[in-house]
Image (cartoon, rainbow, N blue to C red; front, side):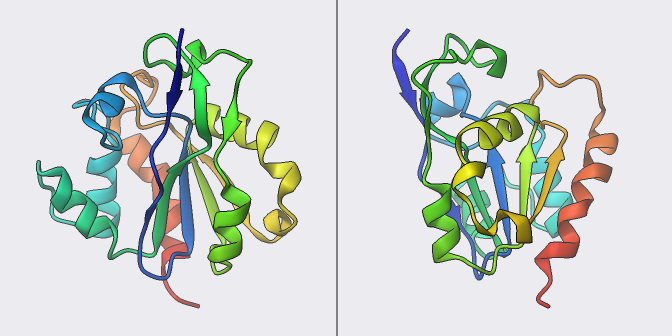
Length: 171
């Protein structure tokens, strides 16, 4: 297994919500696009929550997302993994992204939303201990948008993801 690396963060306008995944899957890494798997429901959920126009063109989706008060990133900067499943991430050689530094640059972020249990697990293991401001933030694990998470349908996931809407409006 070789080391794989995640992407740079996508930073929207005056962000108040940080959405963290674990590590992009194989299709996403190959295309260099967040949530590129055709059955991943992330973009459909964002479209519903944010009132964005769904578009197959990744550049259009990104441009729309960057107008929103959120940041999209992954907990892991690098890891070893065979395939795309979070359960296949090797426990050694885990490197976290500089989430602490990011939050220092954007102190108005008041919620961290985890796209699935693995993102929350790696955040707690690698990042939380370095965050002094975490106690002032809402930390919420949301159902993974991955096609591997077949335990909930789209409407059930969307309902739980709606929690971020309350944090997107200015105070």
